[in-house]
Length: 267
Image (tube, rainbow, N blue to C red):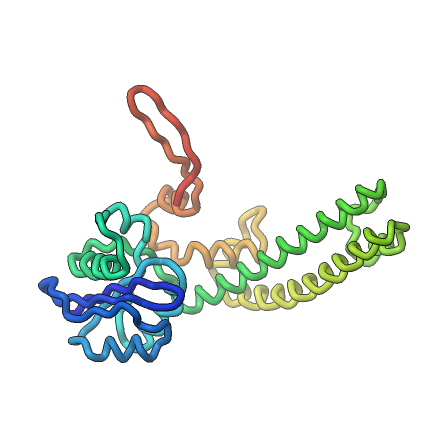
């Protein structure tokens, strides 16, 4: 068995390979960030090969390609790795060897890596959530423009078919132009969100777990699919407390010498 540690950077990858006894088999400092050179370097190592990298930068892409090529790949929690292994000298070579050594000794603090379908579903839902947030920001800016011009509206929805009378409101030329630009952006985002909504609804119809989650009061189709994608298989949690901690709902407590402080939730 060969254990490989990858230290990922934007323009290069540093890698270190150890055998079962911890002896360095191969090392490279400036491996290019494309698949072919990585696979070529791995092909020269004794099989079977298992690799590790921290959950930073483009680990998802590299893990998927390595698994397709028949190599096992693990993703480490960078914060936990730092707690376990604190080196006096920090270099790319040291970091890659550190990961390989933790993997070899079965001490690597790994994170759960969702399957390909779940990762794509997360991208879809997070992309939709991003567009909804951007549309809300645009709406708030438009409301700010009208407030600055001392304009008030009785309708709560200014962006529906009936509410678009706001386009005819007399505004100063600069504010009117800014409002029109933002209304255009609002309409573009609304169309894109509607396209994503169709994809999400189709995905929800094929997901029994999301359908069950949607029966919870206050949880709709989008929230249910989002919960399922982010949580993954519920079997990976040993208890409800562990699930709550994963979701960041469990506050931290630090107590020493009779003094206790409560901190923000951590995953």
